[in-house]
Image (cartoon, rainbow, N blue to C red; front, side, top):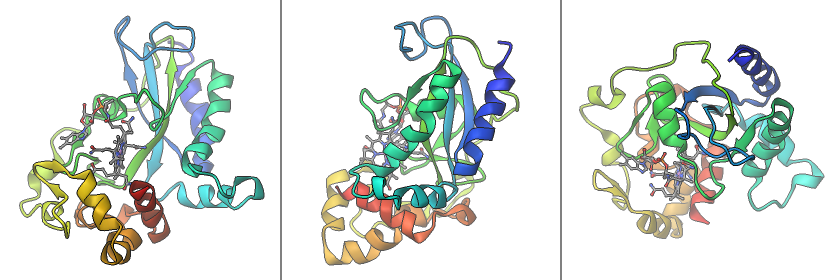
Length: 230
Ligand code: B12
């Protein structure tokens, strides 16, 4: 579509200072995309998200404003405050990862960037490792061409012989058999769990050697673990 690069440029200009980046563009065949506000199916989706701890400082500043203290889901609210006005300005429909019905953000990221699932289920990026996430997505009625090739071939975990992620969890909640959510939460409720994963982040995720330089700051690690525990 003409205007695709303009859309991407506008998004980058508006979101970069907030630590949110264009994380890929997905194209859909007719009738295959998520529903737009008008009930028709999107032909393209632009994924928006953080890379490493990029959003933590802008989000923390916003969260300290008097009107934003005491919110139940501050990161979701911040994402919406940032992305919804852009959706309106661009004539797009906005989707958010935690809003039901869950949109397939991970499937979209696999399509857009060729990302692969780590043994933890979280998608692993060849450069950022497990330290990236999605804050929202914009759906468009027309195709939006990606302006840069972003497809990553191969699976980063294939080169990792030890797979320390699969042996780091103190209660074996993270194994090749899947993620035992109840086991993880029970551990987080103990004093040991609070002092370990609760304060310093999921030990299995922290054990991944790929993209370690992009690891979230400690306060962000604790924030995400607190959200998991709720
Ligand atoms: C429900 C949910 C959870 C649940 C259950 C997760 C589970 N493993 O069972 C809970 C609350 C426990 C959870 C926890 C976490 N989650 Co979560 N979660 C989601 C949510 C909202 C829906 C996932 C879903 O069911 N999708 C189903 C369909 C609709 O999506 P899909 O893309 O087609 O499905 C893909 C996934 O299901 C994936 N997948 C899921 N689990 C597994 C496991 C294996 C082994 C494999 C291979 C694939 C896989 O495979 C599908 C590919 O087609 C997504 C956001 C979203 N809308 O996708 C975040 C999301 C998946 N979570 C995310 C994260 C980061 C986490 C945490 C690390 C957060 C934290 N607090 O520390 C933890 C730990 C997760 C873990 N080790 O599994 C990120 C992942 C980002 C990434 N890099 O991939 C997402 C995308 C949210 C975001 N804002 O970015 N999560």
